[in-house]
Length: 573
Image 1 (cartoon, one colour):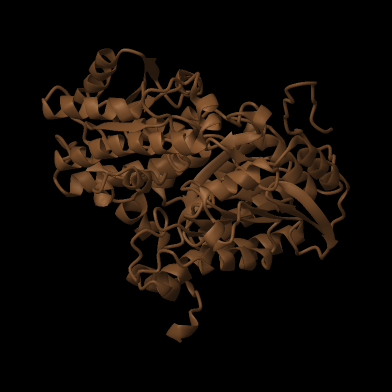
Image 2 (spheres, rainbow, N blue to C red):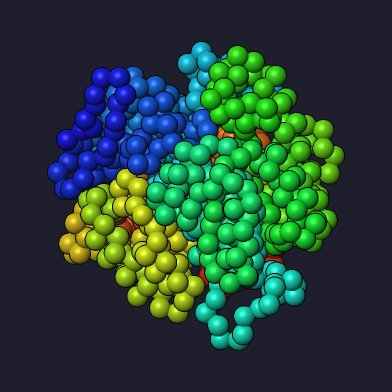
C-alpha cells in the first residue's frame, strides 16, 4: 500500500513486508526509500520535505512527490525515470541493466554556481538542494553518518596516542577505546552533527556538544545518541570533566550559540578550569542561512533569514569567524582541532578571519589512507521493516570477515546502542573487494529466505572515489587535483553502466553551492541471478573508482592496492 496522508501536514511512512505496490522490487525499493527519507522518524522537517542539513530535500514539492510515487508504481522493468532537482521530468525505455531512476540535484554552470543564484531558482520553483543522501533517497537517519564519525574519532584518538598527547594512556591489553581520558568540544547536533556525541562515547571519550536549538538536543537524547542535555554551562562542564577524569564515555548537550560558547570555553581552557583535547564543529555552516548569528533568537531565525538573506549571511559569517577564531586558538593552546566538512573555515574567512585555514579538514588529517584502499561507507536497509533482518545481516557480515575485529566491535556497538529510525538499516566501512562479497552474500540471504524481503544496498556520497570537494574529501590532494570534478562524473557514469538500481549526481552537498560535485549509487539485492550479476559488477567498480582516483593522484598505498587486487591502470601497464 502507498503512504497514508492527512490534510495539512502529510506524514509519510514507507510500506513494510513483502506485498508490492510497484511492479517489481527494482521500483518498489526506490519508492520505499523515498518515503523512508520523509518518515517523521528520519527527516528533520518532513512537512517541508527537508531531510537533513538545513535545506536538503528529498523532492522539490508535494506535487512532485505524488508524481514520482505514482510513476514508480506503474513503471516496467525496462524503463528509467529521470528526476531533475526533485521533479520527475520523463520516463524512457532503456533495459533491465539500466538504472530505474537517474537523479541530478542542484547542478549549476560554473559562473552561476552561487548561493544567490541558487536561491533565486529555488524561489521560482526551478531547483532544490539535494544535499547528498536526501535527494538520492538513501538517508537512514543519524546512523548514516555515525559509523564514519566513529571511524574519524577513533583515528583522532590513535593520532593523539601516537604523538604522546593522549592523557594517561591505558595499559597494554586494555579494551578502552582510543579516546578514553579525553574531552571533545563540538557544535551542531542536527541530522549529521547528531552522530558526534555517540561516536565519541563509543570510543570511550567525553563530549560537550553545543547547539542553539534545544529541540535538536532533546531529539538526539531521545534516540540515545546523546546522554543528557544541560542549560547551565557550569553544570555541563562539571559533568563532562568528571567523565574525562574517570575515563568514561559520556556526552552532554549544552543549549547555546557556538559563536558565543566556544570563545567562553577557550577562556576557561586557558585559565585551567577545563581542558579540551579535541575541538571540531558540524553546524550547518555550509549554508549561512542555516547558521544562527549571535544576537538573533531561534524563534526569530527563519523570519530574519527570509526577510534579508544577504544581511543575515553577513551576520552569520561574522559569527562563524568568531567561532573559528576560538577553534584556531584552541589549536594554539595544544588541542587537536579539525574541520569536519561543513565549510565553516571558508565562511569564516569570508567573514574576515584570515587564519581560518590554519587547522586541517578531517579527510587529509585522518581518512585519506582509508580512501586509498577503496574503503568507505557501505549501508543497507531491510525493506521488510523487520529489525530481525538486520540482526541476520550483522551476523552474516561478521562471519564473512572473521578477522576484522574493528568491524565486529562496531557492529556489536551499533546493535546495542543504535536505535533504528524509519526502516531498519545498518552501515559499516568496507573496501575494494569486500563490498562485492557483502552484496553477493545479502543477495543469497534473500534468495534462501533467511531475510524476509529484499535488501537495499547504498552508500553516502562521501566515498573514496565519488566526490570532488576541495574543502573536504579532496582537500590537499598529493598532486594538487583538489578541484578536478571529472571523478564524480566518471563515478556516476560507471555506476550507471554497472547495474545500479538508481544513480545520482549532485552539486553542493555538505559544503555548499560552488564547492563540490558528488555522486551516489543504490542497488537492490532481490535474490535473483540478475541481481547477483549486477551487484558483483557494481560493488567492484564503485569502490574501484576510489583506488584509481588515488593512484592517479600519486598515493603509494593506492598503487599497492591496485597491484595486489588486480585493478587495471592503463598508465601503469
